[in-house]
Length: 281
Image 1 (tube, rainbow, N blue to C red):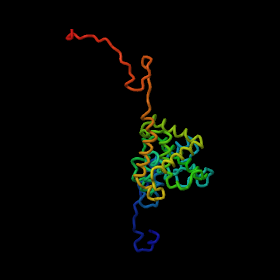
Image 2 (image 1 turned 90 degrees about the vertical axis):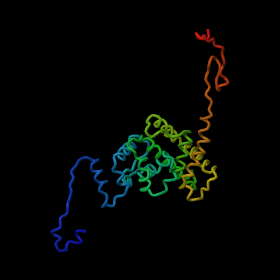
Image 3 (image 1 turned 45 degrees about the horizontal axis):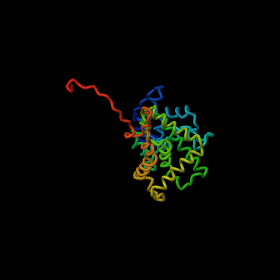
Image 4 (image 1 turned 30 degrees about the vertical axis):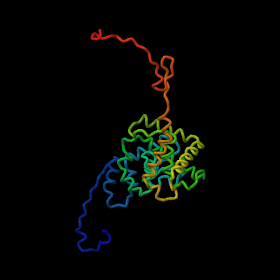
């Protein structure tokens, strides 16, 4: 702008205020970049990459060393030897976390920037356990491999985010613990990690998820179906009734005085002498 107007009269008398901040602290530099992004074309994804949470999540991926890498910066692994399905971008992380962890696959087909804005209080929260972020991406990468190997028909590609939500329920047969409770959440996530060690088992679970899709009178040819919350609710209700039920109805048998007790009616009744009170005497 200044260069284009360099020949204007009195341009030499123009004063431009400049503020220079010197720091060797990365978090300060990141905060300044994010706060002053009004004049430059920087995407929401690039701004998110500057946060401390993203750096922490990237390090967590490296520490687990289970085959995935976290692409905190755009095209970070573009010219590397890392397999494409093993690279998890911020956008993919948001979508798989929202689908599998937050049970909201119906929201991920929209604009990524809007998704990040609308769910900023639910995703990339500093106090969150990081393992569910990794596990959701891990399950998704396994699903991508099955699609690439033509072991799952591309008819279901549109419902891939629903499939990873269903995968979680089929394997664990239970609800996800709070994201702020480390021990129960680690135990839950480790069940999912164990489930992906056998390729045939992964395929079997996803085939079960596909059967669930097909057994709920859903018109899978309807392109709007994937965007409806009612679709998510219907599938969640189905897995709760058909995969959680056996745990609810499971009998607990205990032994009391050589008798096996599985219900109240099985409890043996004994005559017990009672001490009389002063008033009864």
